[in-house]
Each structure stands twice: as C-alpha cells, then as structure tokens.
Image 1: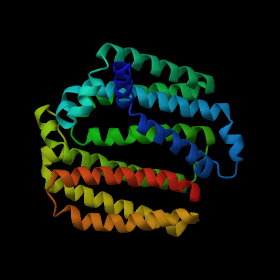
Image 2: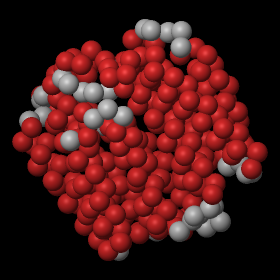
Image 3: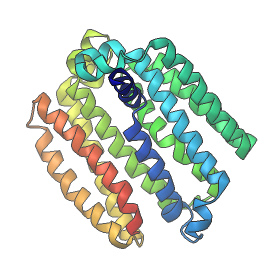
Image 4: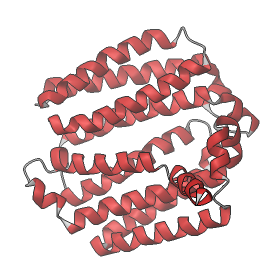
Length: 286
C-alpha cells in the first residue's frame, strides 16, 4: 500500500498536477470573464464543446510535462534530488505509454470539437515534443518556446469564442511577460545543473548581469502593459491586482541588480509563480 501511494504521488509530480489545475482554472475563468463575458456562466460551464477543449488542453499539457520529465530526469537529480528520487519510482517505459495515451485521448476530444481544433492540438503536441527533444538546450529559444507553449492552450479558446478584441491580447501579453520573467529566474537559480548537462541558458551563455538587464526590461514592459489595461479598460476590482503588480515590478527592477544569491532567485521564482496564480484568481473580480 505504501509503495502504491509513493508511486501515485510520484506520478502526480511528473504530470505537475498543480500546474494542470491552475491551467484548467485559468481557462474556465478566462472563458467566463474575458472571452465571453456576456454569455451565461451556466451555458459556458455546461457547454460540452468548451469542456472538451479544456480537457484536451489539460491532457496535452500533462503529456508535455511527462515527456519533459523523461528528458530532464538526470538534470532534476541535481536541481531537485528528492523529487527526482520520487520520479524514478515511475518507470520510463510507463511514462512513454502514458504520454502516448494522454496525447491520443486529447486528440480524440479535439476531433469531437472540429477538424480545426484537431489540427491545432496536433500542432501543439508536436511543438511540445520538439521543445523537449531539441529546443530545451538552445539559449533563449528555449525560454521563448516554454512561455509560448504555456500560453498556447488559450488560443484554442480564442478560436472557439472568436473574441479578437485588443484587451484579450493585452491580457495575454501581460501573462506572457510574467511567464518569461519566471522562466529566466528559474534559469538563474539552476545554473549549476544546467552547466553540467549542457543546457545553454541565458545566465550561462551571456552572464548574470545581462540576464538581469533583460529581466528589468521585461519588468518595464509588464508595467507598461498593466498601466495600459488599467487606463484603457474597465477591470472592476481586478485593477488592484495590476496596481500591486506595478509596485512589485518597480521594486524588482531596482532590487534584482544588487542580488547574486541562488536562494533569492529561487524565492523570486516562487513569488512570481504566486503572482500569476493570484492574477488567475483575480479574473473573477473583473
């Protein structure tokens, strides 16, 4: 029984169940309050087509985490030894079979929606595999790809709801910049493992100083997008989230240049992840 529980926990860690829950929640809230704010909430939640898209996105993302874990197992042994030990409780063969099963199930759901959505998810799954197999070691391109792949499922909602208003793209841009900041902070915190296994990240290739400059520029971009959203659109109580982000990012711009601590990078990486989750939840206040 104990072994079964350990393997179950390990499998949940491999598929990043927490990230999957956030993704699903973000898609539901984005549909209700951003993509289709004038539609009945009950109608959206009970819409089988919409639910099929969300489930296809979640299953494809879970498969993506599995294949990424498959290729990164040795590096994770240095970065996260305890979790890497747990992950080894799930065999590589089982991971591959589950990866194929989840992707296939996602494509069946996509086919149920439409052939366009099916092609969308075929492309998405292919990009995830290319990222894990090839691009994960290419400087900067890996960060760009990683962020795009995390935002990609929301474009499926864009196709379905056909909401092409500017505010949707500005929200997406703000999220993309925050994700890029989070990804670069992760690179700063994992330089040792990345160097050992030949991952050409920005801090390794161009140094910490230039990486921090890029982080400052990204933070400034996020501030500009936040100000634009607050000034241009009626955001309800969510405006306070953007006000808080502006002050946090200003502080981060001045602080990041003075710190060279791995623990600080790790803490800020977790902090920005928390900001993103808070932003997802605050969508209900629009």
